[in-house]
Length: 218
Image (cartoon, rainbow, N blue to C red; front, side, top):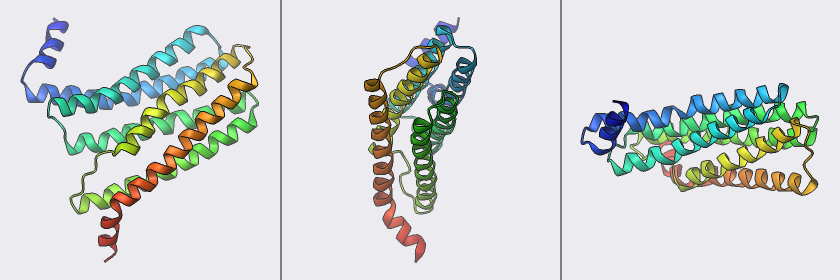
C-alpha cells in the first residue's frame, strides 16, 4: 500500500520517517538535474519535442524538491546540520551540470557569443560557490549557522527558471526554429540578472561570515 505509507509519512509523528523523506527530497535533486542535462545533450543530436518536454519536467521536479525540502524540514522541525550543508551541495551539482552543458550546446549551435556569456557566468558561479564553501568551513569551526541565507535562496530560486529558459531557447533552435532578436536579448538579460545575484550573494555571505574570518586569522 504505497499511498498509505506516503500518507503516514506526511501525517504521522515518526520523526525519522519525516527526516528521511526531507533528506530524500534534498538528495534526489542531483540525479534529476543530471538526467535533465543528459536529455538536453541527447536533444542536441536527436531533436524531438518529447526530449524537450522530459527535460522541462525533470528540471521542474528538481526545482520543486529545492522548494519543499526546506519548507517541510522547518514545518516538521527536522532541520539538521546535514540538511543545511547538503542543500547547497545539491545547488552546486545543479550549476556544475547545467552551465557547462549549456556552454557546449551553445557551441554546437555555433553561437560563440552566447557560449562566452555562459562561460563567464559559469566561472563566476564556480568561484562564488567555492568561496561560500570556504566561508562555511570557517564558520563551522566557530559554531556559525551554516544555513543558506536569503541571497543564496534567491539565487537558486532565480537560477532554475532562467536555466530552463536558456535550455528551451536552445532546444527549439535545435529543432530548426529560429528565435528572434528580442528573445535573444531577453535571454542575455536573464543571464545578466543571474550573474548579478550570484555576485551579490557572495558579498552578503562574506559580510555575514566576516567576524569568523577575522577570528580565523588571529
